[in-house]
Image (tube, rainbow, N blue to C red):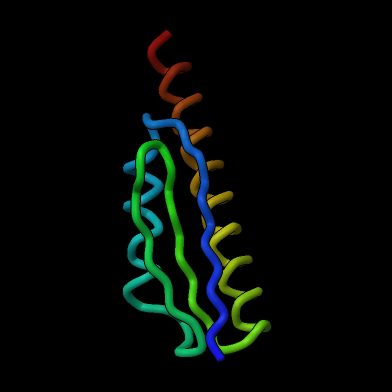
Length: 88
């Protein structure tokens, strides 16, 4: 029995492409065969679809994507702030 989860994350359009590009490689080479995923952009959302063999794999995949997303957003925030300070 496969378990399916869809994450729909509303994101500022200015950082939509960088986030998509940072997460896309994770869908092409998953760390395990117990889950697989797809990522797409729709309007101002990043949509991540995860299919896993069991609940444990589902939880691990969801947590991984949420951690990667948080890390990417933190990096973008620092980069944007640094760029603004540098321009002054």
